[in-house]
Length: 198
Image 1 (cartoon, rainbow, N blue to C red):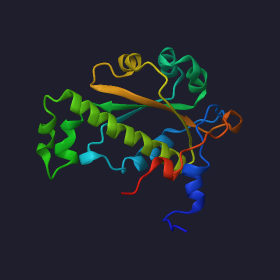
Image 2: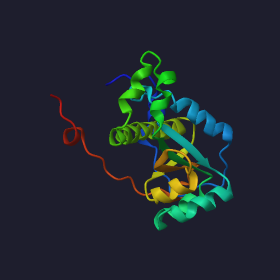
Image 3: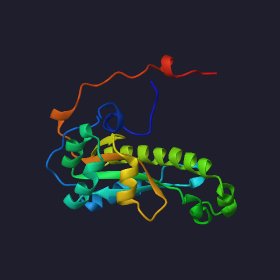
């Protein structure tokens, strides 16, 4: 049996028993709780410590109404019912932070100058990693998540990120899930199907 640093119960909470949520309890998520999730997930690694993800937390009725028209029909009701929704964005100006976040090589940012496609690919990859850390951290701190990509990215960008160089990656409803809304667990690929040892 493989040993591990955290309890089996913790692994169940984060991975094995955790489910994507589609229905939510009428129970708010505090700003302090959202801050705690971010404070934990920000330690996850990214390439050259770039940390391009930006998190906009939609919690007010007014903000949800701004988000609503940009959601796909299948995601609209369940997203509006969630106590909080995180828009996980990617800041395409992330290279400007390298002198602070990667101080032993502050000129790292020069390698992105004029390379829009490279910069966007780098931002997408690393903000996706950070979004995954966010889900893991939220579960570890007692919250449930409903990540999704069914929305109009351009519409969300214009509505929430106008005047910035931030682009939306995906969104994630956050709160306390109602087990009645969980779908049957879908299968996963086995080790032999998904992995090779070379």
